[in-house]
Image (cartoon, rainbow, N blue to C red):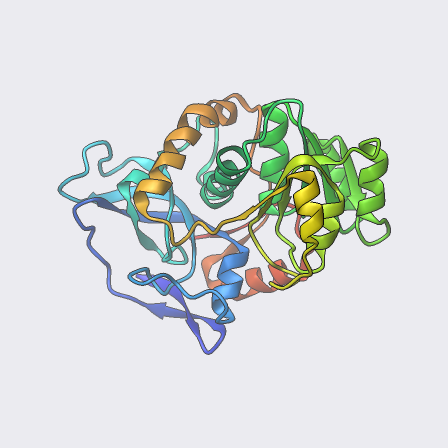
Length: 321
């Protein structure tokens, strides 16, 4: 099979032997694969694959089941699925845990479905399971126009939360508003701390979903209401920050963080079941949708990474096979 591997910090086309599924896996003929920031970090040597995972990048795929393991009962060859994987997505075929495969929501193409697993699993787990976002609460999303951001806007609004986002241009801010964000702050021309104070009547937000980290951390504390929750899911501005412990104490703040890739299949399967019950009907109804900025052929994966690093995109970047 054709695949894209990482060689000395670059993406390179290669040929790999076709793998056979283990007892609880399926082999999927890949139609499309999502491109995500962790793929870029892995290419740069900053986010190694977990032990036992494929070294080929790619954390989400959509395609057709072509073989299944002896313990798999609910999937059969010919089924169209999307799947969260620990690696291997940038290839013509990819192994996936059967428990982490979901049917293609009605009305969505395979390309659209490939944009679902990584972002929807991540957003659901962090916003609703970890931060316990409630109806009528106010959520601040940093990076509102990213794949994570465009997903979080729609899910939060679908479950009746108020949404404020930060983004790096007026075009991106407008796109976030069109998706349902109640307010959008251009962080390049506005101070998001002051804007949050004005937007919330100096009360602050209830939940923050942050992919930036670094110097955003102390500023986030200034934006938080009493008993607010901050979930850190990426650190694009760096891993270190100054912490005001007194602010955390006085406001009774909850600071949390997570990564998804290294969690076991049982944990991820729990998220898959919640998505199928709570979110897949919204996708089928068209209430929410994956936002796809652009597609690249599998052989142009390096160009897709270059485009992602330029931060020009709004929504997801997809590789087509």
